[in-house]
Length: 414
Image 1 (cartoon, rainbow, N blue to C red):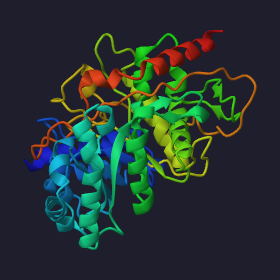
Image 2: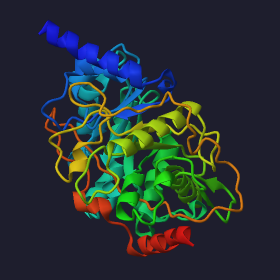
Image 3: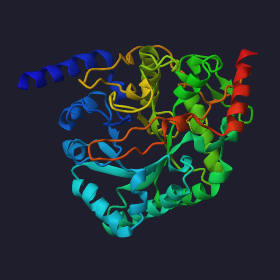
Image 4: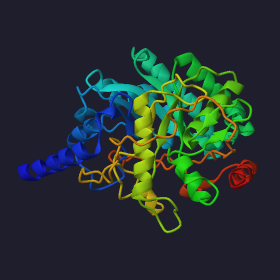
């Protein structure tokens, strides 16, 4: 057993020392899903997380084994409360019991800084679920207040980009009209409690759906001519930043210009089915490697160049028990044995799109940053059920927006 553990750590150290670079530290967050039967123990995951310089981890539950393993490491945690618990957590007493057991009991040794209540709830088109979201968030926040933890732990929820009605150009970003009332109440809660607005963003799905019209370099942060927002003259050379600024503008349109936006999930699969165009190790390397380089620069989007992006890469491991297409099981930076799934190659000095994206030009042509719902894991460690929409819903979006986006992307061919 000890020899096996030695080989395990040796493989990690040798692989990571070759492929990774210290600039990853300071700002990187990572999603730690556990839908698998072959992952390392939480104790063995600690050095893996540290080896990539990640200082923040997002769980999909509040797995006590993980939280105990990361005690006194300084790593910040976002813990999750699944959609299936929203109705129960509306009860203040049950919310307080959950916070005591799953948050307070681990503080201050484990640095839990946020609880996300529900995942992509508003895009389920489930009125009962949507109606439970804000009351559940309020009950959890009240529990934190009662326990004297509200100054160190915030409460939020994660959204799919399909909450947007329009996304191109970024300056016209707006929320779906049918969600505005519900979102407005949630946004007021964020403003009052000082919690961030979480968005899951996956440019991979935009490329997968239209590989002949969406420029691969644009979605992979590779050098490209970029696009111009005609209303602001801001230049965008990657899709993720365009999507984020569309969200900023949607928030501003409702009066929440200063609300912080965090990217709670983004990533690229290293393997997929035959119809999952672009799911390759090379593309995953470019997307995640270039993204990590950009995070190390601590620069924001063209619209918010001085704002910290607070991005959580999806995901730490390939998860062999996730349902759906092959890509769902191949988003990990690491294989279950702790070795890299591919070389991130971030020690190179190649150009990265997004490192200079503040002013407009005259040669850009519009490319729609099509908002696309993500893949989302949950942990099987404590019996949590799925907290993400059904697989087919990940590819759905408001028809008129998708059609308009497809028309606009064709301008690249002109």
